[in-house]
Length: 214
Image (cartoon, rainbow, N blue to C red; front, side, top):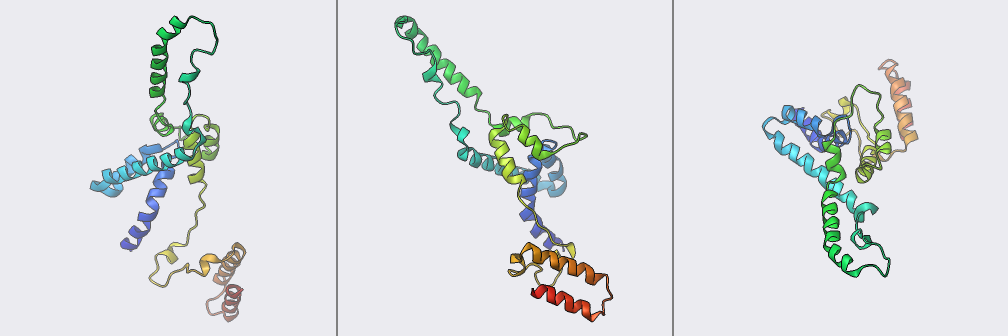
C-alpha cells in the first residue's frame, strides 16, 4: 500500500506544491513548513525542486508574455526632440541620461515572482476567492497572474480510494477513459441504484451491464 501511495504522490505532489505557492495565503511558506515533516532529511532537496519548477514555469510564461520587452527604449526618449537647444549642455548631460537609464533598468529587474513571494501573506481569516484575487492583482503581477490562470484552472479528476489502491486490474482503462460525460454519469447513477438493492438481485446486475454497454 505504501509503495502504491508513493507512486501516485510522486506524480501529484509537485503540482499541488505549485498550486499552494500560487495561493497568496500560503505561498512558499506552506511548502517550507510541511516538506520537512513529510520528507525529513531530503526535504531541502525537495524544496529546491519546487522552487526551480516555479522559476522555470515563470520564465516560460515570461518568454511568451507581450510584456517581456517592457521598459526598453527609455533612453532614446530622454531629452526630447526639440531643435535649436544648447548642444553643449546636451552633450554634458548625455552621460547622466545613460546613468539614469542603467539605474532604472537595474531597479526593475525584480520579477513578479520575486515581488509576490517577498510580500506578506494574505490573511487566512478572511473570505477569499483565489481566482478573483489574481484577477484584481493582474496589473501588479502581469506575468505571474497569467501563470496562475493557466495552472489553477487545470481540471482535476479522481477515482475512489477503493479503486485506486485495489490489487485488481486498472479501474480506468483506455476505453473507460474515453467515455462521454453523459455515459459516465449514467454509470455512476446506475452504481448508486444497484448498491441500494440487495446484492443477489439479478435485474440490478443486468441493468448495470446494459448501462455500460451503451
